[in-house]
Length: 235
Image (cartoon, one colour):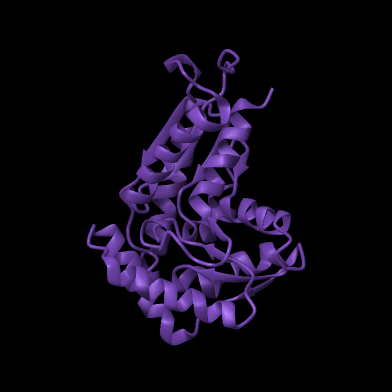
């Protein structure tokens, strides 16, 4: 392992929810060891994680202006630190990215764009997309995937509420085996519609999704961890 790259600090806007941010941090540490051969404290990435207490704008759109205000303030805080890059450990929050990015003074690493790129690298032409109803309706992923001519298949509207319920149980620490079964049934339904892989387009979903499934799974948290580490350890 080479000496740690100097003057680089990864920034993460997290807390949306906290479990997903903790999972991302844990993945970054484990992947530093596994993929980059880190063995000493000095070689692990410098990371600033903002665990933000933010109004629920996903379930209540009336909270969106207040949520945007909070995120803008955190971007200002990030600017003062002098981070080498910034990211968000939340898929749905990328809806607010155009507004919060206006005053951002460092490169932004988008997990949406990174997942779309990796989907293309896997030569997947039709992919099943799971996420919050807000993310699915916003076309965030659909637009990113369209750049690679990849078609996204989404669950039925009746299944939106089931997925949201699983996500909220993860946030409250109450996910269970039944949630895995629910997600597996939905994923198999997308496979029947021609999906060649599944995107976990919510950072809570990997914490409830079944470990074994007969399709490639694009875990948005893991994809973001890999992208942040590539940035950090790049020469």
